[in-house]
Length: 200
Image 1 (tube, one colour):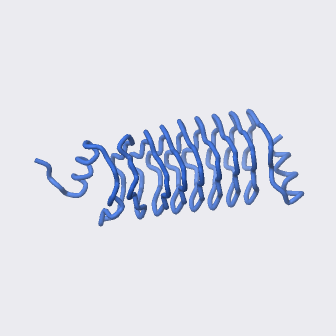
Image 2: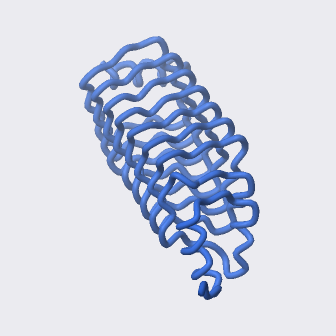
Image 3: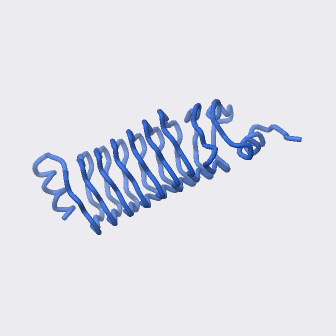
């Protein structure tokens, strides 16, 4: 059903909207520059799909799998990811506005140069992800595992990561990303070691 809807949208130079889809499988689908509005995807599997430049509006992804998918320069507004797996997917230079993500995994995901505006990310796995040169505006991260995540060039001022895991995060040699970051006592001790501070 989904592949047919995509083909029809391309033929009509329109978008895909107002559909509830479950257990759909889309492999190597070309969804680039398509708009998806008021969609609900449940237990859907996307493999090697191209969503470059796509737009998602008021769309819900629940228990979905994204394997090798590309979302560069995509736009997400008022969307939700719940219990999804997008490990290794590419979201470089995408814009997230009002996004909610929970209990999902984006390990090794590439979010470099992305904009996070008014987003809430909760209880997600983002180990070894690329969050370099991101812009964070009123974004909240709670219970997120950022182990070995690359935050190079991402200013964390005002962010509260005190209930997240930030072991081994990567930043610049000047540590400017950490200015104004809120952490807990144990995290502060680990960061002090990174800064070369010896605690006695």
